[in-house]
Image 1 (cartoon, rainbow, N blue to C red):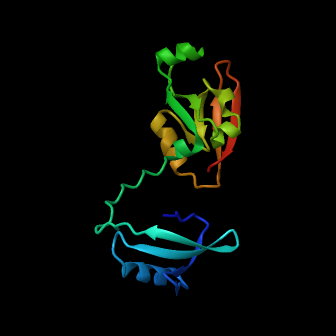
Image 2: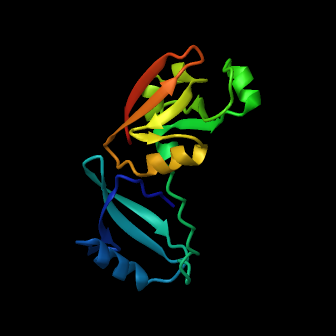
Image 3: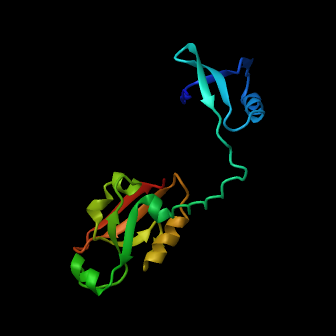
Length: 170
C-alpha cells in the first residue's frame, strides 16, 4: 500500500474523475472500511497511482477541547511584576517597601525587544497615566490598552533615577 503525501492533488478514485473535495468525500463514503481503492494523484508534476486501504472514520465528533484562555495583557507584553514588600525592597536596594517592582521579562516578548530586562528591579510607578500601587493595578491598566497602542511604563530605580519605557502592545 502506498501513502498519500501532503502535496498530492487527488484527481481520480478507481478511475472516476474527482473535481472537488465534496465529490471526493462522496466517492469515499460509498466504500467500506478496509476497501482498497486506487487513487490517482498529481505529485511532482506527474500522475501517480497509489493503492490506499480505507480506514474507519469516527462516528462521533471528537470531544471539544477547551479553548485556551486568552493571554492577559501582562503576559502579552511579557513582564512580571510583584509587590515591593520589605524583603524585595532590601533585595533590590530600596530603603522603603511599597508599590510594585519589575521582576522579570519573558524572552522574545515585546518588552524583551525593548530591552526591559535592564529595568529589572525598578519600581513601576505608573502605566500610562495610571498610578500603580499593586500588581493588580498593573494588570488592570494594561488590560485597558488595545493591541497596537503604546504602553508607557514609568519606572524608578533605587537611586531615584526615573525612566519611561514605551512598548507597543502586541
